[in-house]
Amino acid sequence: MADKKVLLIEADLINPSLTKIVSSVKAKGLSDLYLGQVDVEECYQRTYIKNLYLVTAGQNVISGRKSDRVWHNESLAKLLTKAKLDFDYVLIDLPPVLMVPESLAVAQKADGVILAAMVNKTDKKACQKLISEFSQLQIPFLGTIVNGVSPQHSYYASYYYSSYYNTYKGTGKV
Image (cartoon, rainbow, N blue to C red; front, side, top):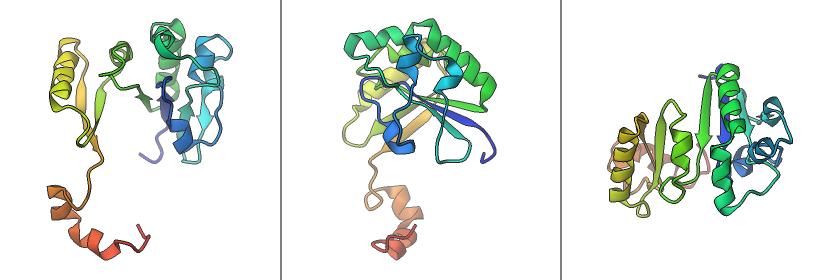
């Protein structure tokens, strides 16, 4: 996987967070592409991680209900088409589908969807309904990432990582 080129698209225009994690620069990106201010290739930003590129949410603020227009704009379709040619993998970070149903429009253009859920915050029945909706819309569901799992309270973590966790706990070493 290390030699594969990966593009990460920050498509959460309401609450973008990926730029803070993988890049220190709020570069031109998705909102600028939508407004016709840049071409697709100008949106690709190198990150400090080898072969990982980022398309940021962009420098222009597109808030609230206006953000759903981006999903139905031809600039996003051009970005996805070009990205599939330029990269081995294209990952799209969408706003929460349960809160922003327009995200499903982008999910329908994807090869698959991974659902991110937060322990003790994400409603299980809502997730089950959403997975059912993916099926009805013929969106391939690849699995779920569960955030917020504490190593001390997880069955699998205690089974697999207990000696590792106890050995390195508090040392600051990975």
